[in-house]
Image 1 (cartoon, helix red, strand yellow):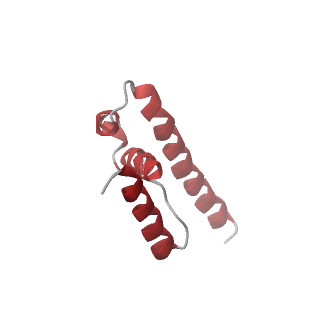
Image 2 (cartoon, one colour):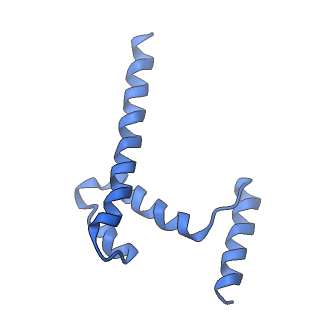
Length: 83
């Protein structure tokens, strides 16, 4: 199977399983985001996993992941104030 076939197969399978297609680049971004959330101390390792030339590219996703985590914590805190 060549690149276009793999790409199409992944999109078809994710559409069938999730109800929407996910392209291969989103899996790369998800890997960096997951690493940043699960192991922020060692997040620089995701640079090598993804083959980025510099950490600056990876850092963009690290900051996004940490912002999401902070947003969820804040939302929970606000919800708990109302209880």
